[in-house]
Every structure is written in structure tokens, then in C-alpha cells.
Length: 170
Image (cartoon, rainbow, N blue to C red; front, side):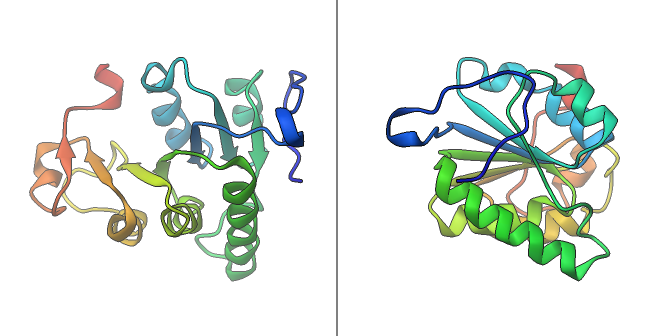
């Protein structure tokens, strides 16, 4: 069983497993701020977060169920494979119905594992991407059920994407 690090105590669900409705995956910093700003979208649903063990993650996600990744995968093949193993374990154990991510690289193994496991994948491209999609967006788009962009200019460049404005204007 995978153990979450959290500041609150949770009792396991029946059968010793605690599943979630929504798995939220992002890196610290701006990606975390953007995903956290969408909190009202999953209000009333059970959640678990995956991110790195940093001070902003611990502060912003205090009281949430958080699983820590093996660090940035963008420039590290070993960390990519560690995060891939973590994704396989968490998706199998938590059985999420939906995965939501704002990036960055950590979401790539999670999105592919989730999709191959029948989990719906929603990706929100970073607000900093105005004209060109990120590498993460290009790698996740083939398995995403929905890709949201935060600029109309980018919607024209990302086939099948949905523009509804910025996460910060909500």
C-alpha cells in the first residue's frame, strides 16, 4: 500500500483501501498555484494530490492528502522512471475516476498511466503559454480527454483544446 504524507489523520476505507474521485498532479510553484485556484471544481469530491516535497506544497496543501514524487522528471531519466512507478502504484491503489493536472513533467507519466487504466484525464495548460504549447501539453494531449488553454491565441494552436479563460479569473 502506498502511504500518503498528510497533516490530518484518515482512516482507511473498507478493505484497507481508500480510493479517491480526483487525483490532482502538479509541480510546485506556479503549476500548484494554478491547480489550487481551481479547488471549487472538485468541491465535494474526495481528492489526493501528487507533487514534490517543497515548502510551498506543504503550506498550500496543508490538511490535504499528498503523495510526494521523486522530484523533477524533465531533466532526469531516473526520476521519470521513479515517477512512472509511483503513478502505476497510485492509480492502481487509489482508483481515481479523474486525473487533473496543470503540469509540468511529473504529469506525463501520471496522464499516460491514468489513461491506460481507464481514468479520464484533464490537462490545463499553463497561463504562461500564450502562443505555443508546452512540451508537457504536447506529450499529454494524445491521452487527455480534455485540454484547457488559458489564452485564445493558444486555442488555435492546440487541436481540440478548450478556451474558457484564465484560472485566475475564476
